Image (cartoon, rainbow, N blue to C red; front, top):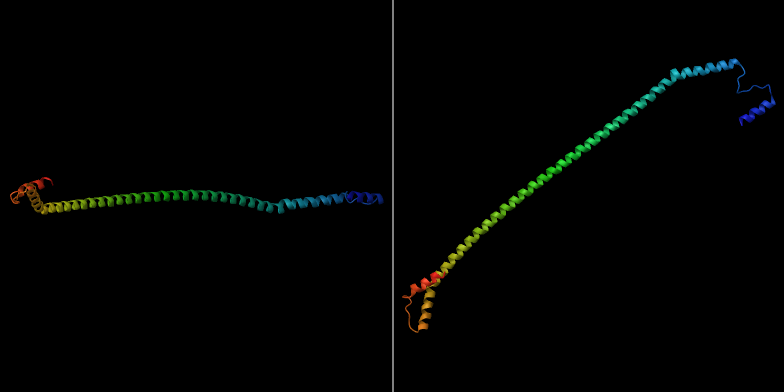
Length: 178
């Protein structure tokens, strides 16, 4: 579109000044002076502070990345320490639990052993009492058995038998069957 406008202007007035092409050396000179002045101003006064800020940002970025890496490494180390502490606590708990089980088993064995010993002692006492009662019963029934035997024998032989004369024979027989 700009080309069309320029072509149209050139056709209207061939003596008109072209705005794109400078017509005088002075204009080229002052344009070059302005360009190089701005270039020197940018190069030595305006650009260095911008470059320093850019370098500071880059250094801060690098420092932040290093700090993040150190924090990650520290977090990994803390996690390892936590896991190690947790494993050690589990081992201690297992050891305490095993020790408690062993102690409980030993106590149970002691209680069972004491109960068995007491039961055996009571059984012995009961057997001794039973034997004493049996002996008393046999001794108490010895007279009755002798009287009964002599009465039965006298009925069998159909003659009176003296119980005191045969008492020693019945006692010997009863003593032998005990």
